[in-house]
Image (cartoon, rainbow, N blue to C red; front, side, top):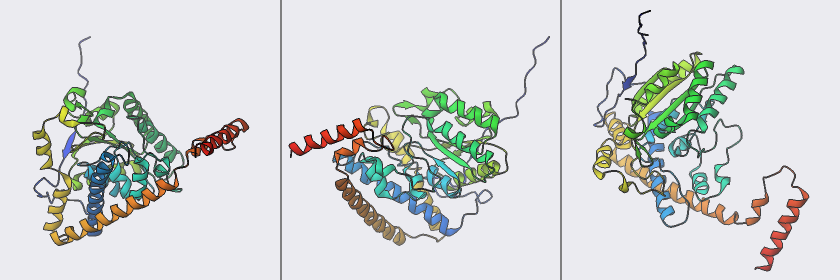
Length: 362
């Protein structure tokens, strides 16, 4: 029998609505009200300034290692703004901006990054999962939540965030396969920031796009300008509607850039050129959004200056609150807590012995 070509109809589209110079494609421009856009802008700016403060605090030895979101704020905040509070949010370890949009207090992020798990506590009743450090491990969790939402016939969408490096992990591929077969209402949002620590995108995968990895699992996939608030919002809004209509998952690749370190334990000057950073700095999302808002006369330089001062005061107050909580949590005996619902006798004995030793050392 002769060989036959299996024809596939799949393709990947690229979406950009607001370019780096603030020019907008009015035919594609989504309907986002003024208040929502200003809230998006404020959250992005808060995330940027909080990142910068945390970097200073880490260099001073006052908090530990963390992963900045600088440069990726649009991919996170615009995505979350397109969803509802009833939808599920499954982060990795760089979703500071998304967490702020969902209402996480800045002092909690400071406390968590100072090494206190109390800062990562999730408020009861919210549909947020805690920070997940192992790369791609949170993606199957999102599929499980989406499957549960479908079984319970709840109008819930689950979004999970991950980086380009995560698309090389088995968890990613297994999750996409299950999500496609079960048609779970999940949005897989890949923040392609071009670097998996020191590994460049070009050495991770020969695929022309990362979005096309979803096509192998019959998942509609889209590549968007991840520094474009309008494009990210539109893509997630469309994916969410598909999910609510019972049409299953979507994979979105947000093409963005990490403007600073992978984590504070990293020195990017060792593996990438400053020219590359400068090129992407010209395309960064906050300035682009500000230009757009100014053209609509919804924002002015005077208002931005005022907002900067408000955010500076907010971050100052957040660190003050976090520091006070750190001082109140300096009881080393907490290492015995939370392991058991009812502490075993042997552990209680160890705790008492530990307390006695601490007292002797005073």
